[in-house]
Each structure stands twice: as C-alpha cells, then as structure tokens.
Image (tube, rainbow, N blue to C red; front, side):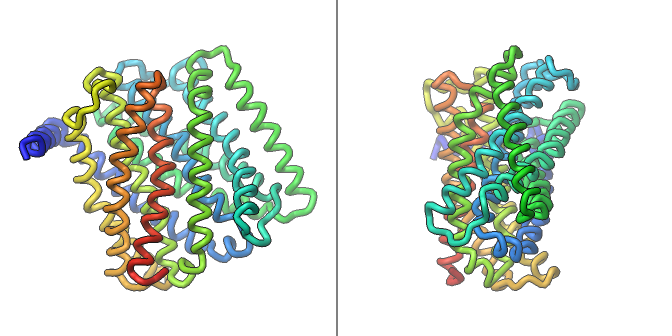
Length: 410
C-alpha cells in the first residue's frame, strides 16, 4: 500500500503543479470524444457503402490508425522538441519542423499504398467474398490518405504552436486532438474517395498515378541528405508497417462482425470514438514516458513503476469519465440520428467493460513500447505512438466485440 500512497501523493502534486496542463489534457480528450462521435456517425451513415464495397471495412481502421500513428508520432516529436528547446515555428524544409512534416507526408502516402495492398491480400486470404478490386483499394486508401494528411499536418503544427504560447504540455494535448482529428478527417476523406471507385479506366489510372507518387516520395525521403528527415523515415517504416498489419487485422475482426453491428448501428457509432480515445490515452502515457526518458528522469535500463506511476494514475483519472462519456454520447447521438440502439445503459456498459479491459492493455503496451524502443537505441517518439495506437486498435476492437457478446448483442 505504501507505493500506491506515494504514487497518489505524486499525482496530487502533479495536478497541483500543472493544473492548467492537466485540465488542458482533459479538455482535449473531451474534444476528442466529441469529434470521435462525428466519425462514428459517419461510419454508421456509410454502412450501406461498406456493404456495397465488400472488404472496404478491413481498410478503414488501418487507414484511420495510420493517420493517427504518423501524425501522433509527429506531435510526440514536436513535444520533445518543445521540452528540449529546439522547436521553432517555421516550415522551412531544412528546419526541425520542416523535416518532420516532410517525413510525415512521405510516410503517410507510402504507407497508404501498402495498406491498400495488405487490405486486399488479407480480405481474399480470409475468404471475404466479392471483395473490391485492388485499384479501388488503392484509390480509397491513397486519395483518402492524401486529403486527410494535409489537414492533420496543419492541425498538429497549430496545436504545437498554441501549446508553446500558452505553456501547455504538448504530451497531454497532442495525442487526443490529433487522433480524434484523424478519425473525423479520414472517414469523410475515404468516403469521398469511394466516389472514384468502380469507374472503368479512370480508377485504374488514378491508382497507378498515386502508386508512382507514393513510391517516389518514400524513396526520396529514405535517401534524403537531411539527417532528421532520413532518420525519421528509416526508423518509422518498420514499426509503421507492423502497425498497419495489426490495424488490418483489427479491420478484419470488425468486418467479420459487420452483421452484428448492422443490427444495432449505435454499436457501430461507438467504434471510432472508443478506439480513438483508447489511442489518445495510450498516446498521452507513452508520450509522457518518452519525454521523461529524453530528459533523463526515467532510466529505461531499470524498469520501476515509481518513475512513471503518477503518469499511469493520471491517465486512469482521465479514462474513467472518458469511457463513460463515449458510451452515453454514442447512444444520444444515435437516438438523435435515428440509428437503432440496444439502450443507453447497455451501450454505456459495453463502453465501460471494454474500456476497463483496454486500459490494462494500454498501460502494458505503452510502457513496453517506450522502454523497449529506448533500449534498442531507437527514438521512442517514433515508435511509441504507432505501437500503442495500432495495438489498441486491435485489442480495443476485440474488447468491444467481447463486451458486445457479453451483453448478448453479438
């Protein structure tokens, strides 16, 4: 009990010392939850499109997750730059911010192409009948990714600049806002891209053109003379490929249960805000741990809960109301939109039960990802966010489905 009391005391001290920063983190999570609901409503509204384009739902979590992974990692790196005094609000390509943005764009487009290929292979390999052609996957993933990347890059840099001016801890603010913005921006972008599918000749031409741009972009970034740009891309590609594969499996998991979600679209609405909030909470924790490692506050060679126990407690403090709010608000907006729901208490129960299981996984994955990457000589800012958010997309999807089955709706 004594270690827990010490952690509680340090949490109280943390909240008192940085009350505005802690509030900013909670407000960011509230904004994240609200915007995640917009994504959820979008997903519920395009359920017909998902049924008309078999296999597309396999791509959706991966496409959303990849935007969050790439730009969440960007936010984490900018947070470290702020803490270490190297952040400068300039877009020149040879600066820290400029090289980070160039890396984010090249990674986003290159991996959009890879996700399209993986989604098609996995959909066919696991027996999904009548899946859309590979060109359709490339157009949806590529154009949807390109549109959302422009918006997310601007949001991430603006949030960093505002955090610098107002003295907020970007580690508390960036992950919730960027992941939720990724949900909101990516889904409509993917839907817009579906308007260019199944157009003989046109779809194939767009797919080929995007593939060429994506490959050239990632190769140039990989071989760039700019040290920061080259380092980010070379470190990020392996973990982002693994993260994308994990997100594809998460999408397959949801696709296989599409009939269950179609019976109660409110349960489909809950998916983006639930997974988004889980990723945001995990992003906060791994960003805080990464920053402490960069500053020498936590020794990655000696794993001790004492070093970041108050960070886990802070995230838990955020998690309890956040998951309850996700369930309640998902049911409310579903009711207002005329989407069928099993009932408010059931939806809230699903969110809380799934959230409790996901939180345990969140803590383990965040700690292991940050410490393992640091011990391997890699930058945890590049690896922590993708490892955590993609893992939580899969584990959160499984937790949601298990909770839905537990409540008798599966």
